[in-house]
Image: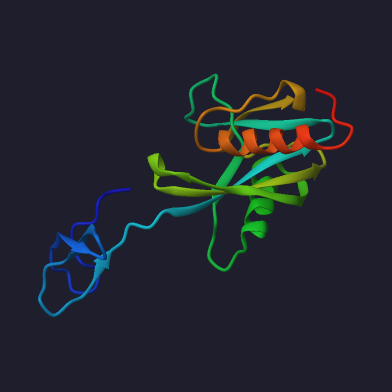
Length: 168
C-alpha cells in the first residue's frame, strides 16, 4: 500500500508528529486534526478440513513450492465467520461450516491482522482464478511455517494433539 502523503480531509501535506506516545502522520494544517493511524487490515484465514485431509492452496504469484491457508480480506458489513466461509466458497467452491476460532495473529510484514478459523468443508473442489494449486495433506503430515497463517496451523495442531483419543 502506498504511503499516505496528503490529508484526505483538507489535502494539506501529512507530517510526522507524536500522537498518543507514537509518531504518526498528521495533517500539517493548523485547523485540521486528521491523524493517519495506519491500522492493520483484517484478513480471515481458513484451516480447511475436507474429508480426512487439510487443504493448502497456492495463490497465483506465489513461488512454486509455497502453499498456505485460504485467506482473504474481510468485507464491509461482514462478520469474520461470514467472510471466511465466503473465501472458502469463492476460492475452492466448497460449502463450509466454522468449527472454531483458532486465533488472531499479527502479520506486521503486510500490516494485517489474521483471524483464523477451523472450517469443515464439503463438496467438489473447484478453484477460482486466484488459486493455481491445491494440496490435500493428512493432519499428521501437516507442518506449520514460522509466520502469518503458519502460526494458526501450529495452534490447531497443538489443540488436535490434546484431543482425547489422538494418536501421535
